[in-house]
Length: 233
Ligand SMILES: O=C(O)CCC(=O)C(=O)O
Ligand SMILES: [Fe+2]
Image 1 (tube, rainbow, N blue to C red):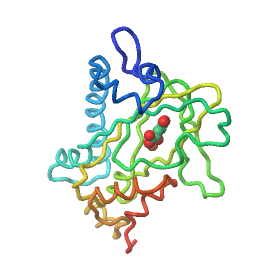
Image 2: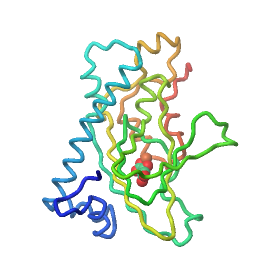
Image 3: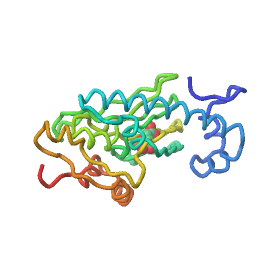
């Protein structure tokens, strides 16, 4: 179920009612009922993200001294976006959100029923690239792997490249929660994986540097990862 209020209004309707997405939500945050539902969504998602991160790291077959500390380090910062995509008279001439991957560990994305989110299928050459629409399913959340997990796993997990198109007939709302490392956190491939692979595909860096690079440029597919590329790989 999408997060909803006692009177049956969903978070989506609340964002749309205000008319203009991002501009409106600051005002809405001061309204108690909105704040409670948004915080509950954030709290339960945070718990889920911690659990999924634990499982994904466990799957890498590495032994960590204190895995809950690693999970903390990877997920301690949360950012909530409220995206409003107005109808567009010529959707073929515009982009809702350009192709990109998210920079953090995991993204939890709640989308309304309109559709328009596409993910690029892995493993196809650029000339034959294929995109799949992530059809909205009522009550379902989309979970995206972000660049941080790709780097940490020395390339085993791939961050999802995605984009959003608009339509001429229906506006759309999505509410992603980005879980990302603290800006001061040192990020890099897990040493046990580097040892196993005999190569580090990514360098170590402070996450703030990654954020600066990510936000300093327009989206261009997975180019954001170039920043972390190791010169020895
Ligand atoms: O609106 C969506 O479905 C996705 C938005 C998105 O990719 C983002 O905010 O990073
Ligand atoms: Fe995204």
